[in-house]
Amino acid sequence: MKTNETVIATLNGLLKEELTAINQYMVHAEMADDWGYQAFAKVEEHTAIQEMKHAEELIARILFLGGKPIVSEMSNIRIGKDLPSMLENDRALEQGGIDGYNAGIKVMVEEKDNGSKQLLEGILEQEEAHIDYFEEQLGQIEQMGLPYYLTTIK
Picture 1 (spheres, rainbow, N blue to C red):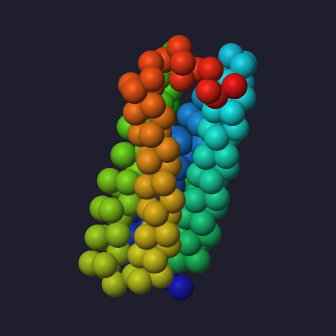
Picture 2: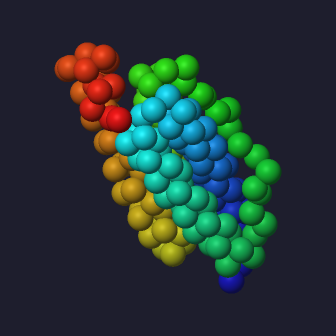
């Protein structure tokens, strides 16, 4: 099946953000593990794996549509210096992803590509769950203070 370049470019733009997220979350997972925060590290690693699955789905869709997936580009990776900055950077990354998926869905509607639209809607739902987690953690830090919060994620 062939599609137009607008759809392929949109999908590749979303792929770029997924590749960025994979790397950011994996670095954060390893940092948290090194600091002794294994529970948080496991969540970051699991989130990175979910982002890998999103990337895989986008690559498959691009190939199905006759396009070429661009896997050599990423946006700037923002590595936090401490746990709160990690969470804020991850929250910001997810917000950018959510904005991108919402814009991508509009493109798919305009281009009458319902298959890609459905794919993006499914990924968007998972991205919203990711941002919810990061916002919850930031809220807990605010409510209980960082020292107490850190004792809860070992």
